[in-house]
Structures are given as C-alpha cells and as structure tokens.
Length: 613
Ligand SMILES: [Zn+2]
Image 1: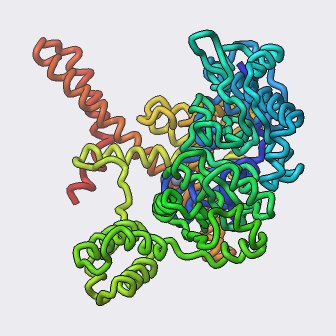
Image 2: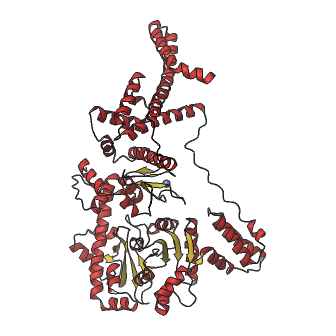
C-alpha cells in the first residue's frame, strides 16, 4: 500500500483549487472560491473550495472532502487510484509493492495501448502522401496536425505487430478496441482511415475516431466502442483544449473534422460530440466550463434535428443556448473558406436564441395555420421553457410563440405554468418523538465534534479540548457512548493526539482518514461550515469576535443532552432487568437494579420536569 508520507507528499503537491479548476470554473469569493457544483444540479453556486484548508464543500448537496475525495467522485476512482492519478500529475513516483486493483491496471494498460497506437498512426500519417494531401485539402496546418496528433491508419495488420513490439499485450489491444478478432485471427479495426485521437481533459488518449478519406468506404466514420476508460456520452472532443479558451462561451460542432478546422482557424473554444447526438451528461460537462452555448451544426435535416436535441439538453441544464444557422453553405468549414473566420466569429456573436430556432423548426413540421398543430408547438416549447428558473425567459418565450403563431399572448400564457418551486430536501422523515430525540442527540454530538475540530490549531485549542474532557468525565460519558460511530471514532483520535501532546492534531487526523470518504467528508464539512459562517459574519460586522463563553456553555449543554439520551437507553435495559428479577424473585439483583434505576432517574428527571412545565 502507499505510505502515509507519500500520500502527504502527493496531497501537498496537488493544490485543490488548481485541480478543481481543471474540471469547473471557480471564482474567488472572500477567502475561498465558489463554483457550480458538479455533483448536483444548480444554477447559483453553492460549491466552495478553500485553498487555505485544501478542501471543498457543497452547501447544496452536502458533498465535501479533500483533493482525493474530489478526484475520486469526479473520476469514479478508488482512493488508491486517486492518489496515483494525482501523483502522476505532479511527477511523484509511487512504489506500490502490492499489485494495484485489477481495474486500475487495466485502465493503465488501455491508456498505454492508445498512446502507442497514436505514435504509430501519427508516424504512418507522416509517411503517407495520400493522408497528407487529404489534410491539406481540408485546410489543416502542420501545427494543427501536431496539436491534435492527427494520424493515419493504413490497416494492413501493421498496428498489431507494432503494439506487440512495444510490449502491449493482445488483451490490452483487444480491450482498447484497436484490434478485433475475426475468423482468421486478429485484424486492425481502423483501416485506411484518417485518425483523430480522443483526449480526456488531462490529455490522455481514451479513444479514436477514424474518418474515410473518400467515398469508397461504407462508413464515413468509425468510432471506438466504449471501454473501461471511454464513455462516449460523458466526453466531448477537444474539451481538453477548448476549456482554456471558453471565457464563458463554448461553441459546439458536429464532428471531429469541423472541430479541428474551426479550432485551427482561430475559434478555440470549440468542442464536438463524439459521433452521437448530444447527451444530458455532455451538456452537464460543458456547463462546468461555460455559461453560454452556441450550437453550430450542419444545416441539413440531420444537423437541424441534432441542434434541436442538443439545444434541449443545454437549455435544460440552464445554459444560455444559441444556434448559428448557415443558409449559404453546408457547414462551418465551408463558411470559413467562403467568407473567412472573422465573419464566422461575428455570426457566433450574433447567433439566434435557441427558443427562436426551436419554434421555427417545430413550425416546419406541420401546418402553422392549423389550431391543433399550433397547440402542439406551444406545448412542446412550454415543456422545455418550464425548466428555466427565470420568469423573464418564460414570458419572453410565450411572447415569441404568440408572435410567430399569430395568437393572443394571454392564450399562449395559459400553457406556461409557473415553475414549481423546488422543495428543499429534509434529511429523513421525522415521524415520531423518538426520531426527533435521536436527531437532537445527533446534533449535540455533531456540535461537540465541530467545536473540537474548529478549535484545533487555534489559541482556544487547549481550553476547549480540556473543557470537553472534563465535562465528559464528570458526566460519566465515554466517546464510545456516542451514537454516531464516525463522530465517536474521530473524537477518540483527537483525544489520543491531544493527550500525547501532539502539535498538529488536525493535520494528523486528516491524514489518518485521508482514504475514508465518510470521515473526511465529515471533517471537511465541519471546517467548511465554519469558514462560511465566519465569512458571513465578517460581512455583517467586521469587528465581530466569537465569544468563548458561549462555546463553554454549549459544550456542557450538548454533553448533557448526550448523557440523557444514554441514560434513556440504559433505563430501558434496567426496566427489562427489573421485570426479569421480579419474575425470578432474585431480590439481591432487584435491589441493585433499583439503585441503578434511581441513578438514571436523577439524570433524566430534570428533563421530565421541563417537559411538564
Ligand atoms: Zn452539490
């Protein structure tokens, strides 16, 4: 396994703000950074990242943790995999004496196979006059060919032997879908094709798209099938480059070739879907990097349909969505050739709002003078627009429909219901007094651990931890008595480090739980909560200073609450024992149980009196 020292080294080398910025846009807000949460759907940012504390927390969905937690969730990795990934990123060698998980080594071997394959394809490209002249005919510069690692697959079995010579196993080559098994052995999947490697956002090659260079081939495109490192609907072509240039706006084109030509013409914020219609996941992915989406598809029937579908997903994700239509030419590439890239940039800046485009497309599908057809159009647009939070967007859409369908506005508005307000989710259901009590205890336990953690490393550390220990012992409580096992474990750790005179307790505890998602989510959640509160308070009153006295009282109250809950639990057991002793006539036992009952009553009594009042 990876040693704690190594883990700390990797953690120190991986600045959380820098890592997260690779996945989504963050804006500085006070002492921390804010962004749209990638783990739940939201329009206003409640995802917070603290550089100082090196953690993230979403106040919308509650997810939080350190840099490893983030990478684990985003990439769907195990803890060890996330450490390895970040180590690789910062060039830290990790000697792992145990075999890593099967999954990870498979991912690694597929990436390696793809990397060797593109080396081969790129080399073949440079040797093929036909491929080179095809590239020239498409207007690709040498720089673009190098940037996109464009290749050529001759497909005469050369790839298999090349991969073998580089130590790539047949299994890896098969699994990465570079070669396939036929009746008479294996063959290259991509034959006589212009090759586009597909990168993930780190620049790893995860798949390929192969384009036919003339009409002799049946399929214009052949794309890699999905593998353990490649899910089509969750990647966008060129996002690894485009995300550096979005500046709030992303342009979406249909295919690799459009994407490469548009990018090399100077429109760098361009991505493409991967041989499929846009998926909701892709829209979500794009939204992390841009607020405005401009769809620029071919203006044939398929392209228009694709644009409507893509627009639906992008709009539903809350992006400002626009469509560029070409009347004069077929696609962006032709447009650039005919009118130049500056004209295309203008067109992008003045693109048509998606709702307008959608209404026009819908109108073409029937008789716009027919009342029933008009209703169909209205319903379809209303269904989409109702997903928008903005009442302005909704009423603008209604007005547009009324104009385009020659209807009175109040008639159209009837179809535009108010957006249902989202009800905040309540954790669990509180259906009885017992649940309510337990919730109270959970809050008390959480308050204790939060107070302890937030004191770590501050001037109050000694005072607070001492006070907790003293009060706890006075009430006869142990951390084992805590109902929440995680709180109990973390508090025991803090206690042990404190008693040992450890200086950097928080750091130690964080490292102890670095691979425990639940625990480090709890710790980071507590710290982030406080950060936010402090910041909000500073906004209200810059001179505000927290009051230690309140903390002391709070600790006592909470511990008492926990003690009572424990006494309540014990009381049930004692009552059982008393009944048992009565039935067997064991007077000796009965006496001691009655004493115990009396002790518990003393603890529980004040609460009962309070309730009666
Ligand atoms: Zn969230």
